[in-house]
Image 1 (spheres, protein in one colour):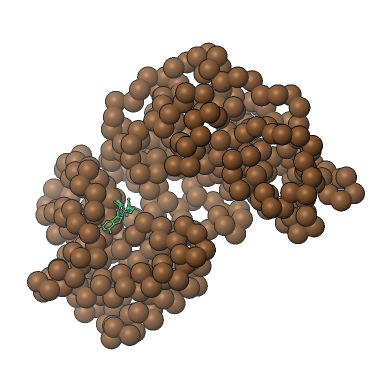
Image 2 (image 1 turned 90 degrees about the vertical axis):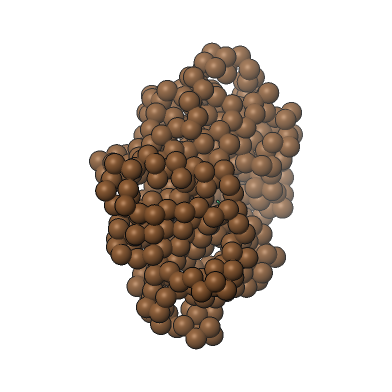
Length: 415
Ligand code: SAH
């Protein structure tokens, strides 16, 4: 597709702006800079809006509070673009936001990293929008239909700030159920340029990786763990390593590069593990990677950890990076129990004095709760932990509002 094709396909937005009145609590939250307005907080609306319409939010005295993108299909009804003073949302406004986001990440390419998150949604002032860069391929992932009418402007602005050979569209699951607002665009559509020769290749701290940007999880790779992976690399020399929830082998490859003689990648997804094996092959010119024995095991993590223990297998370094376990508030208690169970299972195959690296990407489980849960589980299992570090996201995942923090990672040795 070209930009012109995209413009033809997506009808222009109405010039009209919606005016909204909201509850006192929402007024306070918006004054404090919060980027979301929920549907229940709306007390008055000037008309019927469509996804992507601009919504202006006023306080009780009709003073301007914020302007944002309206989405009648989402409980997050408005995602704020500007607080306090009106802004003109257009291509040049978008270009300025993208340029700021790009400047924040300017040092990454210098460290041999061509795969990173260029735009991290709300935290980069572009709520509900993620743009991941994989060398010359950009992946635009939408978490609200409100961005769909803005795609031509967004793609044009991206072309100015970060020119790419192709721009691929990915949609969060809920969006796929509303084709009436997608104008025929589907998950994996190529918005601009040529379809990427899948999988795309990129580098992270000099290591080579492939990613399936059209079908892979998220946008194809988990960039948020970059710094934690590098730290694992530094800990891995001489250590037999187990990577649980390995996906395409990110942690595994860093461990091998760092000198782990043997690495076992465990994941339920056979295609992800096949990519992990190919990622090892891509880096075979590195002596430590060539020397490491890498094995992939496609299995359920819980069953496989119990089985490895039953066989008396023992590792010096165990990484546990499960998927988000609590997507909503009522799943938090269960998620906490699962983290405890995973910690016990991991400790069951960890050598005395070995290192446990355990991460949580569930934003609803607080860092404090997660670290306490893992420590308590270890204590109860008779392997109290000595913490080495508590870490979070890499630099391309800045945090600008409470819900923006989600990743926490514990590095600890077990007795
Ligand atoms: N550590 C990875 C990202 C992990 S994403 C990285 O650095 O790139 C979470 C992974 O957990 C996915 O690959 C998914 O396939 C896997 N997964 C989810 N449930 C699982 C289960 N019950 N057993 C094993 N793997 C599972």
